[in-house]
Image (tube, rainbow, N blue to C red; front, side, top):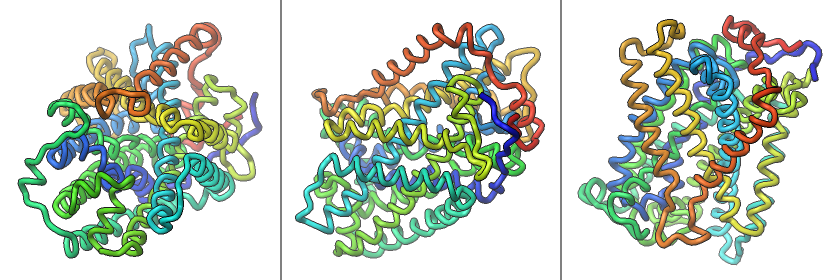
Length: 489
């Protein structure tokens, strides 16, 4: 199905796409919101030292992806780069698998962001209204309302989103200063030995696996930096702006997150009280300020950031959906752009409706919905691994790819290899359950769900992909590489 001539406008300048990416990662907020996981596995030491490892690994990942974004700043991102760099004989198959892995990972990421935001709203309600009894179906309704409102914003007021994300990025930095000042001036103190040497595990795992599972808390704050790349076709001077934004976003967030982690560990008060709370950061803020209202005000700032992240996630996953439909893997009906708003409206609503359907699982079992949410990190890490592995393979070819202006030169290969090792190591631990003994509710379903989605892509390859899929839209690739404004005919 083809449409008349439509255009995607290049609304984002470098500053806006940088703040879009900076806000999307929101790394220091992620450390604060997911603190309970690392307190159970590894303790303060795992977070204080683990975040250094994660920032170095994420810098290698983002630098590798930035090189590819400089070659082809395109909405399909990982699967387009895979197609460009993969061995010719396997190019079509690897591209097909990469495309589906990336799409499912981003659907799951949207579900995870929406669930975190809804949980934060419910947590604030519980603290401020002691008589309130939280229910799982409440979470589902909150997710529904939030997704519908922000999908409508993506649909009718998309021109505002670059400015919203830029303001959210400024708040992201200013709010960190507020938290650091409050914690440093008002909260109780722990010793350096507690922060840098204290290891604990109440999960049933021994020290080594507990430490590596605890490493996943900082990892969650440094995954999804490819979100800005999926907006590439709406960024001015994308070959320069997008690579810089995704790399320097990781660097900036790394500095901010490390400052927050160290300050929070020194001033978090009672570890036992924090672990008892369903949302530890609220308890930590309350211990520091001695006031429920002050704690609510501080965490409400995090809620604003989380809502902005959800808004950005809808934008990114919609552009990936649009690109995957434009290339014929999803029905081309979803690739049509609304001529009035210059937005792929159908591609906006598809992932939103899928996540809303998945959120209904929350009513029966939070574990069932959590199983799909768990797919996000492992799926994105696998997509990074495939793309970077293709880059490494291509570097050894006689007719290797032409690099863009943003490249690492001689450092490229060792950085790519380090990124592969880091990605593979973390991916293994992403599949581990967080505690022992393993039961239905605490089982980590990331690997089984990832296996199911990969099996779907493989079966669908033999049904459609191998014989009927024509591959990527070469006209689109040509226009993007030449830096022209995207036009569908």
